[in-house]
Length: 397
Image (cartoon, rainbow, N blue to C red; front, top):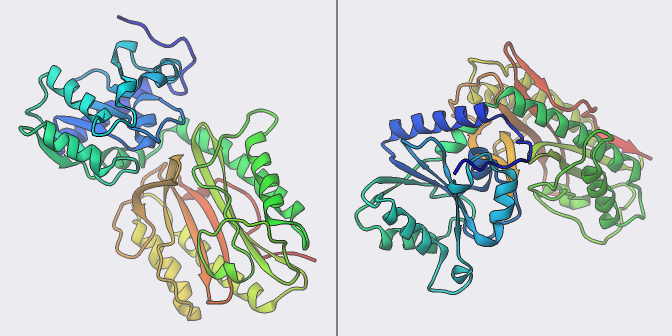
């Protein structure tokens, strides 16, 4: 059966084949015969599949000797898989509705049956043990159902393959960055004292989804984050229906998304009169951010970037304990990070062309804070920013 989707694929079949070859090479190095990839972005990367079906069991299955991966999805989602996967229809495996929320019956019973049917039950099987949506119950089904298999952690094998982007992926991220800029500019335009936080987020979300005149936006893996006032001293706060207050600062973190590729950015807005303490702290924050970006180039490490960043903070006596960046690319809820390299002291990951990361300079002081962040691409000789927007404290009187 040579039935492929007639829908235009996001990437060429050659690119998907190259991804698969790289994954299989890594599997051989790790002694993995069969890889079960449960992480939603990895499923997309391996097969092209994209739908809001990740809330229930699904995975990509790669045999080290196979020409194509398998996609294991709920029968209700097979139609979507036919539309956007590059693989043959015969390699899209549907499991029956009888497995949906009928405990102790579970979709991983069907995976066990599939593995036994194909006589793979004695193989070394790699699992993404820390992937979102791979539950303890799913693991127990494999453990109990495949007593002769050796189940091992694949250690984010596919995530690490994804770290270095193709030029086609970079082009998608550049499109996402234009949407990011539109969303942040709309936030700057709309925010003012007296309007509700949720009304601002409505404007941001609408802008991000509308996108440009040439292409539209996608939903983000993380909602717009909006700590305001004292909340700027905390992380990952969303909005309420409270009104913005004159004299308070607000950190806005958002991401434009195109075809699941993200380019996040954060900026800080101050409503009312200039606050010299916040202005000066933001300048120091930007200096640290630039110091890290300036040493971003092939051959240097994530640690080199972090050391340059913290050297500036140490000069000013600013303490920051959290990492200051992480790799980005494909994203699904609940996260747009790739769970691989961190821009932090001690991470010796060597930077290569087309590695992309979100570098975050957030400074928190108990009652207040400021933040600026950039999505960064490693180029052939250095680095470039995806977005072009001033980082300084945005003061709106």
